[in-house]
Image (cartoon, rainbow, N blue to C red; front, side):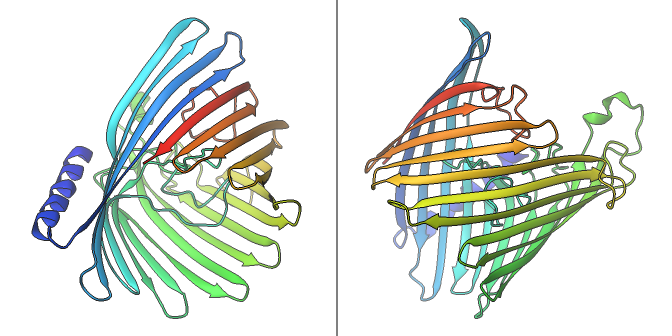
Length: 383
């Protein structure tokens, strides 16, 4: 399904480029990155990898107050992993990264295709991480997109309305661990409203979750896909220090015996830049997750706090440090990154000290390279 969708969108873009060939502006950019990670476990684990992201941007802005633009980009990567001196696994793939077409005016835009959809103010735990998997520790901020259509309208008072429908996505998104039923459309929307000193927003999303793999041991189930509904409210305010919150309630189908009926996600955060040297920015977040059949009684819970700091050493160098604390098992996770930037090149040296099980970003497939203690080096060139 996905390759056919991508092929159709790609052919449509090529047709548009042919039809308006004399009017279009083309911009071609490339990003190449290489990384190496060493984990001081016993036996030692390490991995090497490379990634190539070519991106073609197409823009037609010949009509007054209207614009048609598109983006075509690929994600080509190859990674190898070792345990001590033994080869463990190699993985590589070339897949579409972004593949969308957009029509926009001064107050309206509609975008179709493989795209990134994200919103909310939290940066670490992000209850509103519904359609992306951006990791705050990743210097490249990479995330797979989703296939769908997104429309946004902006009013004169800065109120804006989002409406979306997704189709053909068969991988878990955001905090999800269960994929969607790809042949059943998902839909939702969001409204953002300015308020004194900030803004507040309300979001909603509906999907059918596909539990077919989980029901392998149950003979002749009546159905293996179940509806899920999420409602989120978030706000961000400038009160001297920045202050934000995100709260999401997710209702699972009571007929689904695999999960509890209710899940809640809550994040409260603040940041402030102190007039110390070149400017020291501190950010703190509190996150709580509950999972229960009765929304007023949390049965399963997970609580985290985080503190992050960033300090620039001039224009080319900076240091970032993040500390997490997980209350339930009383575990600490630590991360530090040194960055040096040139016109085209960027270099990173990162170190981590986490629990062996590594629970902060449990939805990600890190092959446990980030459990325990280790270091990572990365080089990136954009041209």
